[in-house]
Length: 151
Image 1 (tube, rainbow, N blue to C red):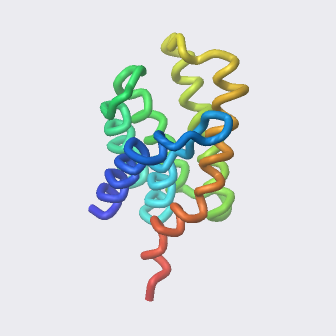
Image 2: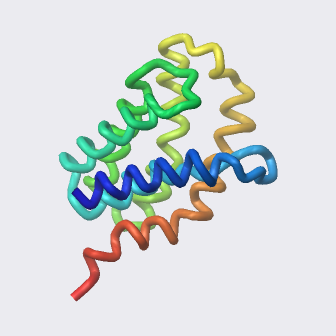
C-alpha cells in the first residue's frame, strides 16, 4: 500500500515538477525509478518486481508518452527484482539499478525498433539522466527506506 502511494506521488512529482525544471544538459532525474529501487530494497525481489511492473505501467500511460505500452513496465519490473535481491549493499544496489534502467530501456527500445533510440541517446541523454538520478538518489532512497530503520 505504502509502495503504491509512493509510486503515485513520485510519478506526479516527476510529471508536474521535475520534468518542467530546465536543468543543464536537458536531463532530469527519474524519481519513479528511485522509489521502485527503495521499495524493492525493503520488500524483496518478488514484491519489488510487482511494484516495478505496476509503476512501469503507470509511466507507460502517463502523458507525454511516445513509446509502446509495457516498455517501461518490463524495465522497472526487472529493476525492482534486481533491487530486491540486492547487490552487496544499499549503495551498490542503487548505483547498479540506476545504471541498468536507462541502458535496459534503450536496449528494449532498440529491439522493438523504436526510432528514438539512437547512438546519441546512449551517449548524450542516458549519461545525463544517470547523473541527475544519482544526485537525488540519497534523499529519495532515504525517504523510501526510512521506515525499515525506525524503532
